[in-house]
Image 1 (spheres, rainbow, N blue to C red):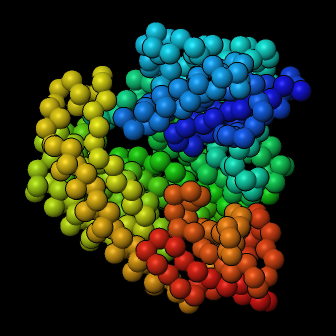
Image 2: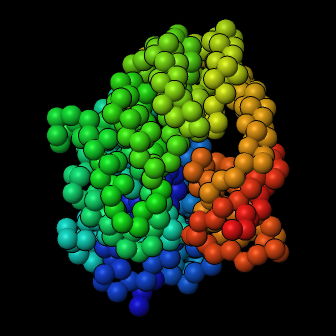
Length: 432
């Protein structure tokens, strides 16, 4: 059988696209490997990211490395898909003509046919997982309607398009049948789900139905836009035991001046009110957010206001990104990129320093607690596990000594937290 090496860059939404692509071509006898640097596969597909400058550069570097492998005879065919080629296909064809063909982020049919297969609508919900088999991402919609001032996603992925609920349930059932126990629900904005299909926000209804899928034990919600956050989603998260008490809700800033310039459609007061509402309904909820620093006209006062809000709100998880100008966006065309790069980097580092102290205090508060965890694998002398408060790859890991007992990947265990540092926890198995 022919082999294809599918290299995926960027976010989990790209990962889902790669997994759907893999299922389509695997039906035609191809053997798929993901992100391998030691495969003898003669065909390579690079699924690119085009969100920010660093991601673009990583995508270009990956393409050039594959081109070098092709010129050396290590591979025969090279195809590029995803966000970068969606937006810059003409430029890429001119600058890197060694690639056999470029396809956009929404042209799955084109790349499937270029690989010698035929796209099948009947297999649209099928996937070959690139994650460990016990968890998977479920992409519930494509695109975004918000058009935040800094964001190129609507230019790349287009307007918000929800996946019909029946398709998502079939996909979830298929994943559960393959052994998936944890679903990460993702989209550019999960809370907007259903508006285009049903004339209303239907995320709460979808979550309730996903909770009924046999075999799924944890459901985790990512990328929730804060404006007009649906109250029924808060209620179903609080009510349903399968839904992790965890929310990824990118706030981006907590200065009204910056929120207005970013076209975020909500105020600082509204964001604070939402956080209070979530914590009142679920006192043990872990809230992950991201902040963007160095956006045009961010003053020292704006930044200090952000830092003070982060100190006060004590988010459980926080990521920080220095602003990078993206052509075609509001901020690139209407505002001046007037915060020096060194200031952007200092502010990002400083805010993460603020957060590191918060993270350590919160982790230390968990020492002595009994928690349910799922084991993701083993690294050296430890098994690596997560609680309901932690998403894979981005959040805390719970490290369990491997010498004392053999644990199985994808199994749930009860542990006692024994120690903590800034971003990791240590635990031992509680013997029943």
